[in-house]
Image 1 (tube, rainbow, N blue to C red):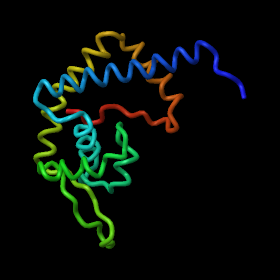
Image 2: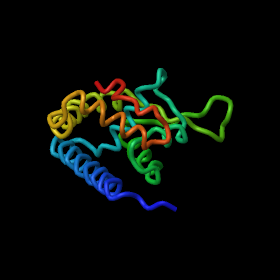
Image 3: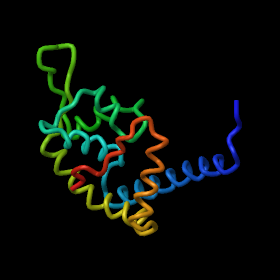
Image 4: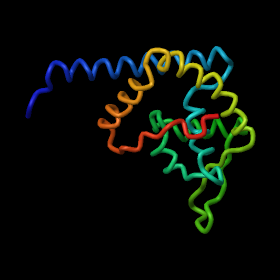
Length: 155
């Protein structure tokens, strides 16, 4: 087995640190603005991207940007807040769909104003568009799927 070069180890460490620092700064900005955590936004955005606003929990797990082990509890809290609801899966009573509610759509739109501003502050203001595009291309090489997407209906 080949050992990673010093530059690869340094890039790895910087990738992890940068991701943590930017995510923490964005989370703090959302909290200060009185919004729930970024994971809530991520769930709402993925639901909103769907034409009918519905996906299975399994589909949601594969799309979200945060750790999946807390998804069930997160969906419980979001359902209690009226942001999502569980609906029966057509033709299979054992399965369910998660559906965004009008309240969930409204919250996602309100959160985007703070979230988008934070992305600009902590990423956009530090990288020129060409650099951001280059970074996105480089990071996509590290991902299993090449579909890194975009904010896709962030507003």
